[in-house]
Amino acid sequence: MQMTPRDPMPRFLLVEDDTISRGFFKAALETLPAEVDTADSLATAMDRANGGGHDLWLIDVNLPDGNGTELLQALRRSRPDTPALAHTADGDSSIHARLREAGFSETLIKPLTREQLLKAVRRALVNSPGGTAAGAEINAEGERQDWDETTALAALNGQRNHLIALRELFLAELPGVRDAVAQALLQQDVRALRGQLHRLQASCGFVGAARLARAVRQLHQAPESGGAQTQFRAAVESLLH
Image (cartoon, rainbow, N blue to C red):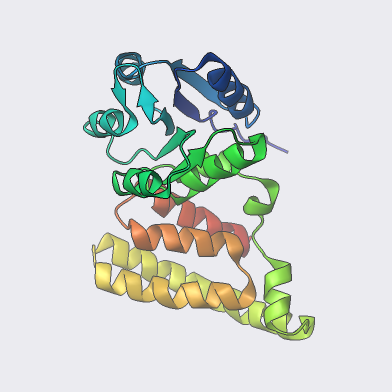
């Protein structure tokens, strides 16, 4: 059997001025696995960012020479689609709301557990327009599964024979939907594309096609994203083969 090469590990920029916090974050992130570049100030972070593309930024809100929002704005001038997480010891909900308004996909309150951190990282990568490939590479085992058996069976009161019949119909129709989506993308017909995706989203929910449902949401949100298009095609092909 021919082995396919693995995708390169995702690369993160971790900005944290506290030595202990930085060590915890770095050690936890490397277990994904991932490459982690670190910085302890706004200036150092900008220098690290110039050295190459990162799949995710994790930014401390309060830095010695500025704040996390200023850093995010500066980084986004050259990389507008890179997802970012903010972390702070401040639990004030108004601060967290302002951070999300500024462009952070999520805010984390320190101290936090390794599991909380890694779940937030996976969410940020999977839900971002440009980070879907990295998100798929490091996602948890449950997130990689094509089918969500538990949810689908619960919706049908545990009637597996009905679920099997629905999935057979779903898989029979999927190639036509895939081709219609591809045609809409080729013609840049956003209205037709979103119509197809809207119907497919509902179908995915009925049969428990969890991975494809996530890919549909991402493509609906960012139809121009090459990463979202790739994720959609991969999810479809995984179900058909």
